[in-house]
Amino acid sequence: MFDLHHESRIATLTLKHGKVNAMDLEFLETLSLQLESLAADPNVGVLILSTAGATFSAGVDLKRLVAEPLGYNDRFLPAIRRLFRTAFEFPKPLVGAIRGHALAGGCVLASCCDYRLLGSQAKIGMPELRVGLPLPPEGIEILRFVSATQHLQRIVTSGRTYVGPDAVHAGLADEVLPTEQVLPRAQGVAMELQAVPASVFALSKRQIRRPIVERICRHESRFESEIERLWRDEEVRDNVRRFVTERL
Image 1 (cartoon, helix red, strand yellow):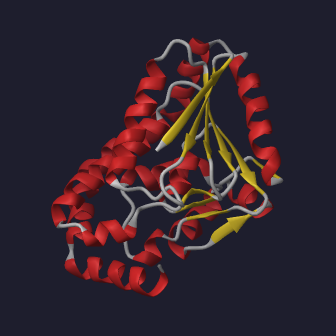
Image 2 (cartoon, helix red, strand yellow; image 1 turned 180 degrees about the vertical axis):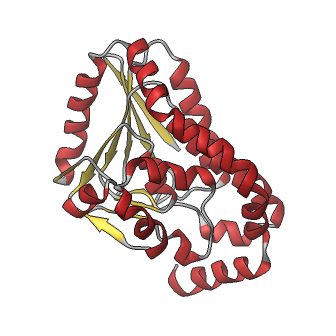
């Protein structure tokens, strides 16, 4: 599911889960545990999050989501929220080497990174609402954190995907490079970030991101029951089934 490589206190975690790194329950739970382990590992100073294939992550595994009984949803929603929080609050520098498409949940995961390098042909964006699934508070707030204010509503509600300089302009990437240059540049960025004392970086990152975490916590109690209800709503599930049948 993942490959982990260490070199000079820089770890590279490569996503290798099916053809498109679709987010099923096992992917979410395993990646959360892996990130928690790396956060606690004193031998890891910086983490690069990368992918082996042409897709960074296509987001939620919709086929699995509609095929499974509702009990799967009851475990899936907390698991994806946990992953977003774990990645967003990762205390060490997290560099995204996004060589392929990062869509929906994959876009949110990429947005958790401190620095995001996007392949020139890669699409990034949020088609989630067009599928019919509401975003949990973590997804909305993480996108609010990274995206340019004037672009947030369009990113979330239009379903548009961004490529190249448009992705940087919208706030969804920091640099765009030819695909073959993404990982080498990510390694260079990781070396630069490693020069910052770990405790100083962790404290600064917590201070910068604390308002977002606090907003998530406030919104959690306000929207949690409504989001859970919509994820279980049969009409919503029917919309997702139609999307899966017609598009996937």
